[in-house]
Image (cartoon, rainbow over all chains, first blue to last red; front, side, top):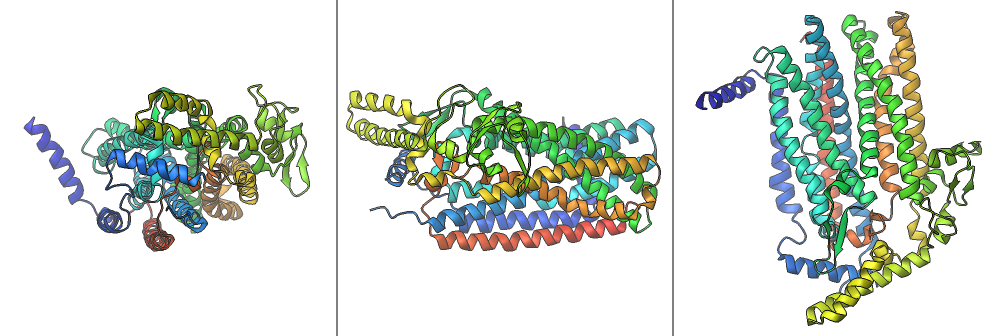
Length: 70
Length: 497
């Protein structure tokens, strides 16, 4: 089991180590994920109903739907 | 007192979602298409044992990797938008939308993370056959991910396999199979994935044409064009067939979309298809919609008036009748909730029944004006034509390319190489136009007949949606410039590097 884990680790480690143009792509991916999760998600995209319990959510959405039909 | 929702909030929320989805869709078709071309080329390598194919595969794999890296996770922004901008929708759809997306997330992560690593890191570390299997499995994993996304989208176009729970104000899935294998999901999957293969084929042919124009890597370019053009022609022909199935399906489930795509106000039998302006092909729209040259196709006014018989043989309801039923459904939901809170079981049960009988038209209760049921005709009409005409052009293009390859004079046809290079963006335009037909054509619905966009949107400040719209625009522009820059650099270096 330990050998399998070690082989998998070595496979990925040597793969990442031998990357050339792939390094630039990984930098882009990491910057992108940081912007997505630590800037956009945290400051701009809070789920609208996130602070509510399921009962409060159904109440809020129910009220909204009925109001908007009037 | 709840303030009225501004039309500008709905428009900005839609614009933001459309921009994000269209941006995401710049990367997905190339991933799906290029993965298949690479799979075929690597199969040739394993079959022939020629190092030439290995070099060829490695080059296209590099471009695949660049596209994949820039595109990965851009779809997550859509999920952020569901929770923030479309909270009523997200709650209303319940687990129906969440289940396919969760399956997609798991598959995308496990299949792609495992096999893409072997695909890129595994040369000389695993056997040829194992590497080949990993390449194909990366492609199949991406395709399987697309299946679940398209299942979720198909459910919005044709909601089946669920029951509305008035207590939780959510839809609950009662048949996973009905959701996963709905006829709309199947035709949508076929048409979308196969048309993505065309994008991949055009990309390979186009880049290879650039090498021929520059008179370098000629053998590599010719071999790549040969594989991609055969693959592209097969994909184009099957896409046309799947488009035909899609047309019949839309005629049944979303007749307004079909009428808008033709700009057809008054329907009838033996309806012609408009090529452009007054140039029409007799009876072709009827055939596309019903597979009968004399089949009946309702127009926009027929659908609003309800003066026709549906393909199921039922008399269609007018817009007025549907709106009436929708209002009954919403009023019944209101009374049910009040009675339920008060513990009045008898009244709650009575109104639950009323709701159940009219829930099919729930969304019509939000419609203030019958004209709001008509999607923007010009956009749908022209997007449909762009998609269909380009689809026909791709068939012709691949045939011409294969003809000159067969004659062994392709390298002398500079005009065709220039056309090949400039056909790359046409693949994207056709693919995006298809989505415009599908999504603009179903307006005003977020979920067909059940929830219009105006009832789906969250009560946010319009300005906050505008700010995030521009933030995305900047981020997307930077990423796109980065991708094109890295791709161009890799292409200029060529397969030998």
